[in-house]
Amino acid sequence: METIISWIADNIEMVYIVILSIFLGVEVIGRVPSVLHTPLMSGANAIHGVVIIGAIIVMGRVDETNYLALIIGFLAVVLGTLNVVGGFVVTDRMLSMFNKKKGKRS
Amino acid sequence: MTLLAIIYLIGSITFILGLKMLSHPDTAKRGNLIAAAGMTIAIFGTIFLYEEDGVKLQNYGWIFGALILGTVVGTIAARRVKMTAMPEMVSLFNGMGGACAMLISVLEFKHLVDHAPVTESGFYSLTADVSHLHVLIIIAGLVIGSISFSGSMVAWGKLNGSVKDFVYKGQQYINLLLLGLLVVGSAYFIATTPTTDVASGATGISSVHVYFFYAIAALSLLYGVMFVFPIGGADMPVVISLLNSFTGVAAACGGFLYNNQVMLTGGILVGAAGTLLTILMCKAMNRSLLNVLLGAFGGNTAASGATASVGGGTTKEITLNDTAVVMAYASKVMIVPGYGLAVAQAQHVCHELEKMLEERGVEVKYAIHPVAGRMPGHMNVLLAEADVSYEKLLEMEQANDEFTSTDVVLILGANDVVNPAAKTDPASPIYGMPILEVEQSKHVIVNKRSMKPGYAGIENMLFFQPKTSMLFGDAKAVLQKLVAELKEM
Image (cartoon, rainbow over all chains, first blue to last red; front, side):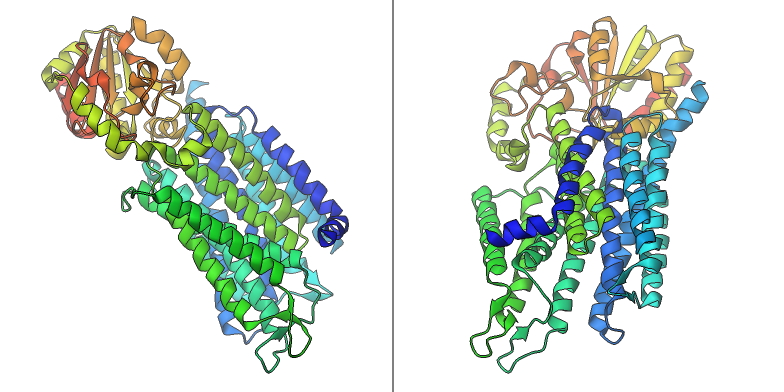
């Protein structure tokens, strides 16, 4: 219990960020039309690709001779990049289809 | 480090802004680009500016190699994928993110162990200040990332048809047992790491714990597989959305690990938004999340199979020729596209049929159920791809108002979303789910490949109603023939 309390005290700013982000996340997509569910899911999918930053940090402090760790890190960065790049490109493609329609209508 | 902090702040703002803009049709595309730009600067900022205790990152060759490889493969895959295969692509990319989070935890743990002096008894005595909570974050990232990865892979396999629904007796108990093991095992691991070595009195990680760590990883992967296995059909988007928010939380664990605000905000934002999206999707089907997760649809397959033979009346078939005539002389036709249209890639022919009918003065509209296709909104994307005009797509409520004035409803491979049992049969597993009330129209033509029940595995009484005619065959082939027939008329 004491560890938890002191940990929260040490990381109080992070805890604030977490709590505010939860409300923000819910608030931000509160009234999304169902038409946009798939692109939104895909866009959110790309955003959680931010995990790649962790992969880069971990990769960047592996010893140059620790090949097993380097390979695992390499894999992590590749997978993270796939998540980010693939996610954004796929979302863009989906949304382009909606925009094309609008161009014609106007 | 201060410049990097500002870059991370900008990154976080773009994520919030991007997500906000993604939830409005007018701004969605720009929102996506803004979030992508924020991600790019956050990544490059990390590579060049990140330092830990004054030490910069190394292994640039490896990092850039991985970034280039990932970008090339990701772009090609994302560009080549067909619009119909979009849901599995989203699931696949989500799995990659989960795997990334899992590997980060593995490496972080390895980092602790590799840098610790080993005692004679094989004990890794930690020099760094590692708390139980630090271990908790590593384990949380490992478990959530692994479940998200293996679960997404199964979901991907299911959506592209290579993995079948897998239901056996007592599944829920096995899954609960696995989950229990996972929670208790992780809690025990966290409580006992770091521990004190009896022989040397040093604080650190025992060699048993190292094996234990990988056992937890394996168990999490197994749980992800077992958890998604029994969930089928219409529930898949809900699961993908849930796994999506899991990966978000796994990314946020990384944020705690490196005291990194952009990972934290990005991860939690997606975690929260994803959870809400999951709930919204459940609402569209009038099912609770728990219901989806326990796989009530799958569990009821056997029971509904029995009622099918009891309730199964006779169906009436209609020929292509007659269908063409009926539609050509109608004044208003409503098309209800379902997954059958998507798998057959028939959206282009469908648009062609629509144009042919309109030339003859028939009013044609589309009725889109919120969960039509494999994902909410997926059908709109498919039809948009085929140039179907945006105003022709009616949402469920609008469509239901217009069915009474509709002469012919053409159902293309949709099933559960038009099943009247949702309104009339309280015993039905889909009871209460809002449906398209097609039976209000004058004539219903159902195109299906066979009489096989739809995704929910329940018989559709609509098919046996006197108003309904069945038109068997692959959606694309049938539509092509219909277009040909109309041309000759």
